[in-house]
Length: 139
Length: 149
Image 1 (cartoon, rainbow over the protein chains, first blue to last red):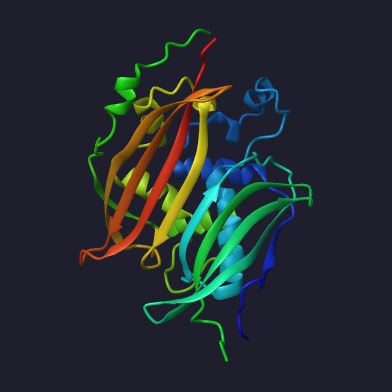
Image 2: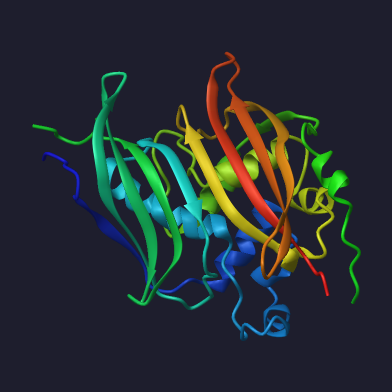
């Protein structure tokens, strides 16, 4: 399979962002920010009664999409911005397209635009990635 | 609640601040739970999920999210906004592999825009393996929003 500019990366679906995963994540990260586990705090911010997903967790959905496409260990770089929060219960889909295919020290790599799509309405995470294409059949 | 905005010079003086540095090993249980949180299956060959590149550098460099908030004199956790994360992987992260980690503040400056004032602070962390090879670098850029009225 030859990868070219404009190639659409197979999407990765997160049907529902789970609050219990945010709590586990907060413990692992030693993250003291209560919006990830305390709905009262989020409500006081005027954002409703749903906890807010950690930025790195949203980023991880993009990682899973790239792993599904180019394999484990293929990610060389990720740059991510976080224009909007992701809330518990959200249905989000990691998506991406290839913007360039090139060689880096003889290794084929793809530069990609990647983003998190929420119900086809908005993009709470937007960024770019570079992945190693070696594991794909470039014939 | 009234907040005192730190002096611009205090923020600028953060550039060059180095964290103590140290070593960090991603435990199997830690990687298993972390990977599960992402909605993915455990990975083969002792590979660690790349999302570990958020907390491993911070904790391994001898700091914490709370201390990073405090260094920039954050008004609260709620006042922090993420500008970007830039993660570079020179080799995949692995479980049970000790990494030497350093961390430094590379940029700190006040930004005044039409509707908001914030301090933009950038942290850079580097991971090396026991052979001294660079494994990964992460650049964290946060906004410390200031209440001006």
